[in-house]
Length: 487
Image (cartoon, rainbow, N blue to C red):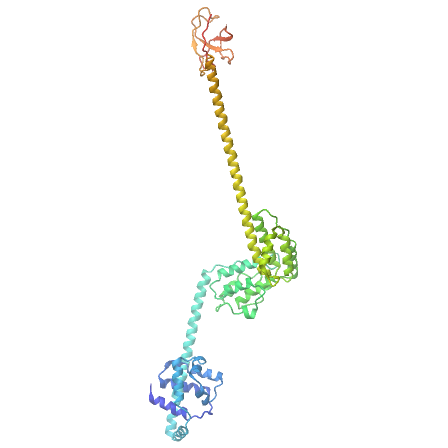
């Protein structure tokens, strides 16, 4: 800090009366010189900016400058706190003085002093101007660097960002509310890194008719390079003329115009959607899936017409009574919870109805599950009973066979023996029928199928018909012979 510089500054300022006019360039030089005298380079760099703020605030005289306080220099002029305090203190040390004014007058009468003062003033002014130019160049360079950095960031984002789905006309008409809503949700996901965009889209979808363009939409999305606007424009070429509203700069306004065009349909389309809504039939009872699907269709139909100007609250309440007539308890509960001051709040009613519908569907699903489980148990029980009955039948058959066997044994009747193939034997003497004594024969019962090469005679003993045969030795019958022949 230079005491000589401070003294010169005090003498100069004290020679100026409070009513003396203070021009902007003079104010700039005073602040610059004060900063040099105080050894504050930060204040020196702000000299031009502070002097401009003086003019904006109406500072015109030296008295105005003496009346300024530190909070004003800090809050309104952008000076740092201790720079402002030091400047105010220096001004307080330089009140207007007649002696200072006369001394200044005497000084200026000296040609050498005048020349020296002018030279010093010119040098100081040149330094101030150089400092100002340097400050402006530094600010411009900083802005350029910031702009370049933003451009690089935006380029990187565009390279990694997924393209938006195309919003197209449907049969020559604007896309439906449902399609536009899905598209806006996709915009929100893909472009979530733009400050303010997600909040704006959420507000538009939640309150379609409750936002104003100027207060709630304009300049709410931070898009300094216009990249967000360009990204959206690439996906709406087909509908821009009808839905974009001619917006070419603000991406938030562009999205708002598209949404308003979707819900505010032309008269012909609005009339058709309203008719489709009021003509909806009752949802059948008994199926949880049917209830949920029917409620979803009803909500989508309501969304298409609710904000078109055709559908009022009365139409919504009437439609609820018709479409959900088989679910009266759920409708009654939803209405009671949505009442306020004797009237039904439609938005709250729709939320409550959605809750009640899902509860009813869950109850129906639980009942169906219990019924299915009971039926499965019933089938399993019947199957088990059938198996047990079959076991009982087999056990009874076994007991019956064992009883017959025991009975036959008690009566002296030989029990049936296992079947075996025909046995080879030699016929008795005198029995041959031309076959020759000693020829091997096969013995059969008359009741069995004959061997294909059977030969022989029939004998009678106690009612049993027997056969002697000669054959191929193959197993030609399955009935055993357990009696002896008596001639």
